[in-house]
Amino acid sequence: MKRLYILCEGQTEDDFVNIILGPYLQNMGINTTSIICTTKRTLTKKYKGGVSSYGKIKKELVRLCSEHQNEMVTTMFDYYGLPHDTPGINDDCCGIYEKIENIENLIMHDVNASRGNLIFNLVLHEFEGLLFSEISAFNNIADNETLALFQGVRASFKTPEHINNLPETAPSKRIKAAIPNYSKIHDGIEIAGRIGVDKISRECKHFKRWICKLVDWAKDSTQ
Image (cartoon, rainbow, N blue to C red; front, side, top):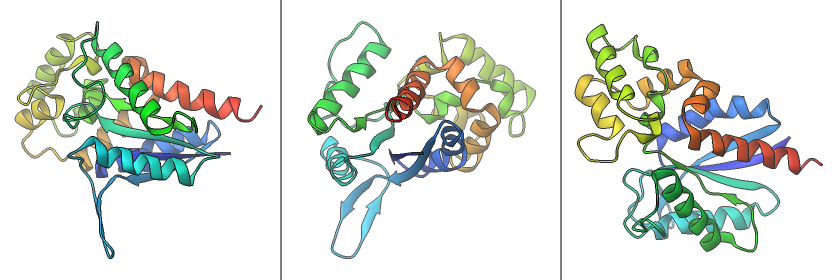
């Protein structure tokens, strides 16, 4: 089994890895260890979750890649709300996929051009976007009117990953507006579990690309 360290933006991503993605990847020969990004360290305490600057992300990635040079490090950070100093964040590209891959490549080069044990990954546009892969998975917390509303949102975009990146219309804001009691950690993880990694991968091209990279790494490193 190969060992993969996944640096997560917050508790929701950490739970997604531990409850859903980790068991899936274990069947592919990958053992996962999830770590919530530390945004501040003192002599006695670490503060975790959320990032206000790219420097904090880089610091954690450099530390992890250095400590685990014979293993692989990857990430699960939302593109929505990335710090303004993130490499490539203001670059003009042909489309959202091209822009995301450009940011990921710039960060990988910045962090560990020599070690090569980082697969930097962003979620488009945020974790809740993945939940639009299967609207029926909301049926335990949403009535028929809300399900129809979400289906209309999904139909308006090419993929769940294209659901947009504005403060009023980001995926989580759409869900929260329709379901005020929605809990990102509890409801979001439960819904993602109903959908499953395979279904999300079929609907979300960039997410699938990430999973394929991890599986290919595990296969290549065993040869």
